[in-house]
Length: 510
View (cartoon, rainbow, N blue to C red):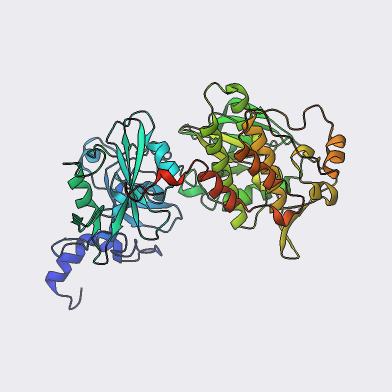
């Protein structure tokens, strides 16, 4: 090693894979304390940037993958595949069980060791409403808690605690000196010290902190495996079709299994029903867009008919069927507003990416475990730039879903994000009526005529005025007067808020 100091060499040698570029592989993540609560102690024998802790269980999908359990320690050796890192398992139990010790892992399943993100009670930038939903899941008991990033104060934090079936929220103050506190009476250098104190004594909280909130919402990896990050044409023999979930204009949707390990949804294309290039464009768009409220594309099979598009599986099917099957027995206004907010969140992301949907409706929203709702089939849109507005010019042979389509889109056969907002208003009608057909009893021609006379769907029975008001905003005659999806998302997420719910005296926060 030339003239390198022997003592320094002994310090660097354990982490050599993190610093040496071999066979064109990039180095592991840069050593940093940006996400840490306190710097790495001087006596630490290795740079923290190379070592990670698992946040969730993961079962290997291919022979090249690495299985691990939540809490396991891993050393990341290579980060070149986007979303999939090459890592070494550091747990002795893995070696004892004969388990593979090196392989690829989904990068969104791990966090840097000794960082804030690695703490079981830290949930990152989730919203207050999502914190309440997670704490109210069965399995959490009084005292269950989480810490999240503050929505209203950049760089701030909030504490959410479950108490007798109700979630309370506290603002964690950050003093100029960098210390954390609920009140200046008692301060803490790190959030870990904060948590440690309040798990021993309530000290002004509504209850002593108990166990961290369960992390039941396991994220989906962005791809089937590290091999499908770029090469996402896969062998159709690797996909088994297990159960048909439904059918539509372009084909069928099946529950399937990839590589005998991974549950997936398989969407097939009816031969001759659509230009294969259009289908592949849908796949290309879906592959490039990544958001928790959008269906994630995994792979395609295009070399023979029928063409397959492989996506993550949402076991409860379409929102339309989900609403119709429930018909109000378990789904009430709180859940309905939550559905709408989640869809608006996914659409706000599409809006930010200058994409449009063209066919937003309850039939194109899918339902997963733990009340998760995701927008599907958004790739059917084609994006063009005309007068600084993103539009889609409809082909004559494609049928319009008239009852969900904005008047200007019916008239001009051109779509924009504002016509998607109109469709969202009709989706709200479907949600609040448990999947009833809008403009029931009217033909498409009658609907077009009524809309030309400024007719709007009437307020459904049992629909709160506040909810109907949001629908009417979406149906403004002038597209520019319709709200953005970002504004709709905020309005729906704050739907139940009242000023008295978060008084300064009680230190509650939004």
